[in-house]
Length: 74
Image (cartoon, rainbow, N blue to C red; front, side, top):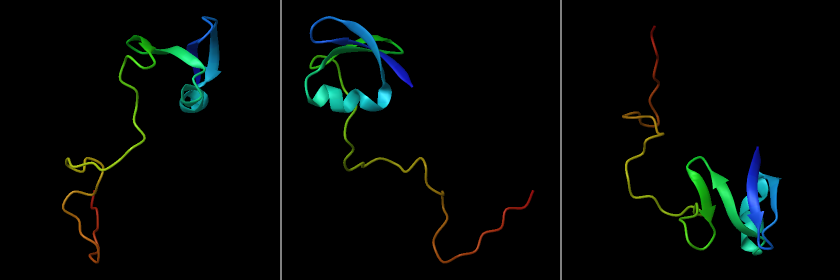
């Protein structure tokens, strides 16, 4: 997916969004466009690299446990 960015030299361009993290890490990107507007690197909150999550599992199979056979009936 294409992503609008502003480089450190103030040039505006479009990059593949998969390159964003790498380009930020080597200090090539000054700002990038989010759905809510421009995000400034080093000022606005950036997406993380993951880590331990202590909240509820919203993607899991609620109440299902391993070792049991479940049958979904329509």
